[in-house]
Length: 316
Image 1 (cartoon, helix red, strand yellow):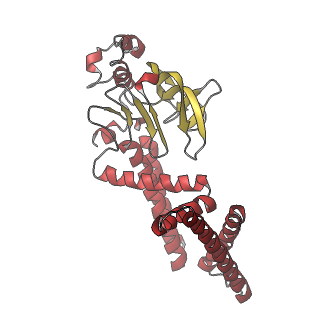
Image 2 (cartoon, rainbow, N blue to C red):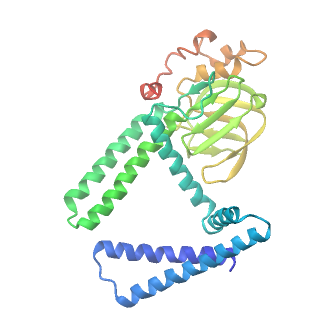
Image 3 (cartoon, rainbow, N blue to C red):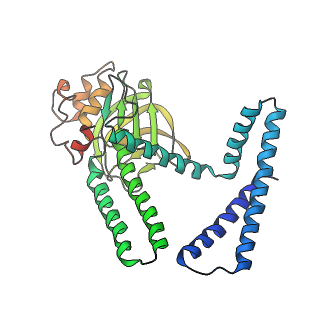
């Protein structure tokens, strides 16, 4: 059986199972013939997937792999065959976000080396995220007053609580995964668990404070090679590169960027850290346009750079 047939069988089965589940939760009586037919479909699909898994296992064994490695590789190949890459990445993002929620509770940061500068960027979105969390709490509580069916209410409660956890995990992932300026002048820009790009120091030509308000999505690549990573529809730091760098979008698509624009709660501090290890560190003062002494950036930042959410970020 070809991988396309196996994938088509899985995605044909899922809508049927979801429809039956919704009907059962809603109290709709399902005719016996429909139920038997649906279960026969599920059994057939499971048999087809078992055949696919066995063939992948046999291929690994013929290639000389041991039993344990052949099983693990067959399962991995089956997941890659049956589950689209975008779906796998969505699940991975959720797992990383939930892990970040645990780090947030423990007041830790994710992969910020000693001597590096952690650059917070959650300021413009903090109020919005907590507002969304409040609305989600209301949405969770209201069905308890309106829906009388215990099974329906329990199902919606589980879905709503999971949604609440994901909203909180998204914000937590942004707090514990800040941008990072390494002690060697390298740069790592992130957005929670969704985006991660590392730029070596040798690839950075210049950095400056530049506040912009781009339109569009969180991540946007322009035709001239400029990549915008906006938070709250704004960016504050522009980094020009000596050569294009490859990045990966949240759902797996790849691209190349020659200039990076991203948001930092304290942009002058970020620019200073990026330029102080370069051959001509005093140039960062002109590029910051803040008039502050370079030695103060690590402790104060620029006047006016304080944004809502700094207390949350700095407390971790």
